[in-house]
Image (cartoon, helix red, strand yellow):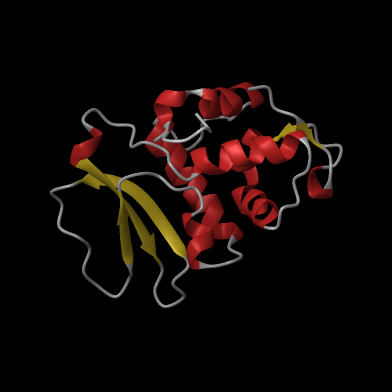
Length: 161
């Protein structure tokens, strides 16, 4: 897939594609997608990316032995952290809420709070560590686009593969 440059809203004249925006500002991507603001080629690309962003495989050997642990802050319940833990690890007990999934879902921070820029910054930092092994890796246009093009990174079960 070839990605189109976004040229509206806060990304007008910024020369960014949707895969870059997902790594920079996922909250904005999900907000625009869920309100059908993407038109033309961007509508098709956003549909493709939405499903991939919500279904990222656990990047471990034998992924069935692992789970993704999403933690929420107490008392605000905003996003706090995400990490990949062994399936055998007991679920978190305490006042902070934990949610467990078999995949990385980039929409998770938005699912617990409609607007959480800090939560998304933390999420992307955690995700980069889980997937690339570093929180400081520079996500170039090519790296972002190549990541979302790689079918092996996603649970694919529909025409979006």
